[in-house]
Length: 168
Image 1 (spheres, helix red, strand yellow):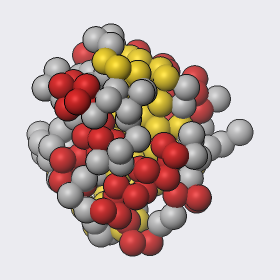
Image 2: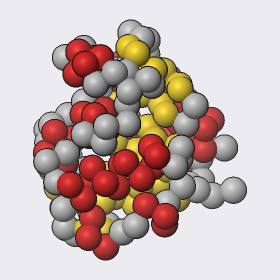
Image 3: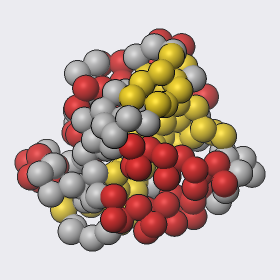
């Protein structure tokens, strides 16, 4: 069954942490909608141009089965906008599939809903998760119910496998 996956992203996303998982999700037969501050194009840290399908103002969490938050500097920018925080919070509070890699969990911290969850992230984000009440595991991918987190680009194969399996 095809699932609808929301991907929240803006400029300075870590290119490979967006492109590789999105390709894996699409290859598994699912629909991906990129969501940003506004429709148009954003640019990754290494120059990848990413088309933004929908503005955050034009989407509702109810329209999607899953949320993916790639890393880089994108999540830090998104978490400064309450609309993105509320969007992510909806997925977490309703126990819908939420996946993020590297710095992606920064957006989840803003929701106040990582307390008691088992997660991983990039090394420098792990203390932030810990202080927000998450249990940290330094593993390539950590699955806690419908929450999937991963550390860095070298962990993308394990991350993609876990996300695709969860969407199946």
